[in-house]
Length: 117
Image (cartoon, rainbow, N blue to C red):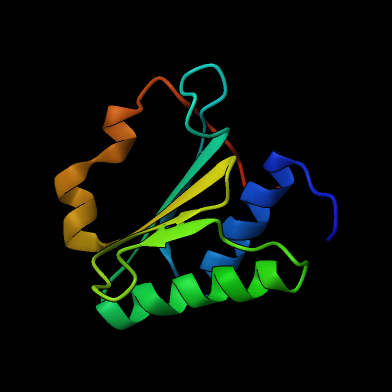
């Protein structure tokens, strides 16, 4: 397994989501705000199939580095899926659900990480 810090992991996940044209990719730095994870990644797709493609891209990319998802929920529905990589939690939404739940507003105190650097 390749050693990777949580910021690098978050950026790698965001780029894997971008490879499948995920929309509005947001990486929130949760350190000091939440005990759940160091980073939350929030992104969306316009269709259930795109949401699943984003999830598959993330999982495949990380498996290449022998990094396995600890837990995942909502994959079959393709509306709001959560991938738990321990210190990084990924939320992949169908656009309608993202607008409804507005996680960015819930965690408004979190700094945004520029994942494209």
